[in-house]
Image (tube, rainbow, N blue to C red):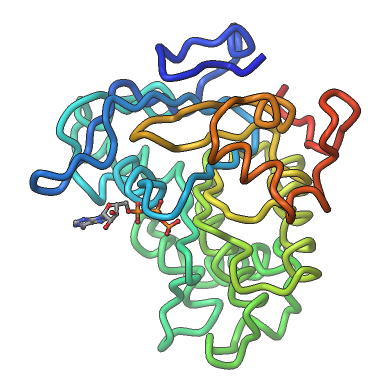
Length: 281
Ligand SMILES: Nc1ncnc2c1ncn2[C@@H]1O[C@H](COP(=O)(O)OP(=O)(O)OP(=O)(O)O)[C@@H](O)[C@H]1O
């Protein structure tokens, strides 16, 4: 059964699980346009949540709102049990350090090497000797599967896949609990995308990360996401497993999860499938 539909977010599946991010009645708009209207969402510790929705529904707006890059009109957002609005500056910084973000285009600084890019958050939040920062940067580079010599390369010298990995290494720089990935596999070829998905799943398993992933990539949704949340009608319309999506009666959800492309990836008979990761459950 789908977890919930346009209503209060406490679902039976989530009972007793550690909520890492909770959004309640979040409303965001621009001028007279309301993009998100009383949206509710929970993300549980250790899961990879895939966040989907038609273009322009507000996926990026929600991520940016959660990260406090956009203001909200009302509602509360708690991350790791804490509401930023109730924290003082040092507490906010401490909470920020527990979040890692990979923006859509990788968003590396072009004038900095990979190593220097990874060290940006370290410089911003920590006061570490250079030798230790170098050691940490090399560790992150290995962690994301880049060769050691990538450390001294500039983004312009990297392939698309390497840029994504470098950006992921930077997102992991401060050993975050929760990682936000905005369309991490966009622009990658299918093999590169599958490898990146596998990397994310492995890092989740080895580091105990919680992952919030905005994606249009059905392969990612099917292969690594534990749960999926669909944004539509200004809210999280439905959230749950692939089977929940297949069973949910909405034209967009049906077209997306039962469309031609989906049929080549997602078994269409409910219950006979299993491809989702199982971490965090
Ligand atoms: N800063 C802004 N000012 C005004 N409107 C904005 C702003 N940011 C986003 N919007 C509007 O909010 C809506 C949702 O945009 P958003 O980028 O979140 O969509 P999305 O679901 O991420 O789409 P896509 O899948 O195409 O990336 C759009 O109509 C967009 O024009």
